[in-house]
Amino acid sequence: MNGWFKELSRRDRALYRFGLLNLGLLVLAMVMYLVDQTEVMGINAWIKPMKFALSIAIYSWTYGWLLGYCQDEKARRLIRLGLIITMTAEIVLIYLQAFRGTSSHFNIHTPVDGIIFGVMGFFIAINSLINLYTIVIFFGGKIQLTGTSLWAWRSGLILFFLGGISGGWMVQHLAHTVGAPDGGPGLPFLNWSTLAGDIRPAHFVTLHALQFIPLAAFGLESINATTARRWTLVVIILYTVLSLYLHLLAWKGIPVIHG
Image (cartoon, rainbow, N blue to C red; front, side):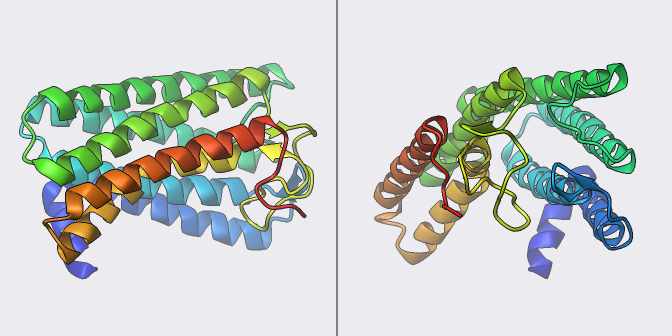
């Protein structure tokens, strides 16, 4: 693991450090969870900052690793800068709302909350364009990858980008629960609804194709390079089917796990 972090730092020091910064914010949220008992929609206000700090750290390191394959330094700088700016805005506003004792997402109850949510949406839209640009680079740019690994990263990037569709659905409806109000019974920490449909599991799984598929391809190549391409294709198909199934489940109002 230590060797992996050294390689990540070599590939992209800025995104490596940005990931560490978000781990520091995760620790801050954990401390606040212990000292601040404020609840938002039935759960501690600091659970969401915890989840997003960890998620952004993983996202930053994933991009730091994949940009190591890109030979276009101008594209690397643009993607890196865009990711850091958009994710900084996102995490700062999420923490701000937690300090204020209110929700960050789908919150338009006051003019200030509406502005904050609108700004978050703007930066997420910019981030989606960055993801789309990265896909273009991985299909038509100078990439130091071939074969199985290249298609694994391409597939992960495409699914990650498409995961934004369910994010857009939640923004449009100002909710993540289907068939019940937000804030009902949910799984520990994740808080995914155990009573009704919830878009968040589908959104989560689709986004994390960006990590799962390349890791699966790496593992398969380590076991048997000859059959890795075939089995990686199977993984891509099954993962895509799972993502679609979770979306359909949510839109039908059915929870992933019943309470």
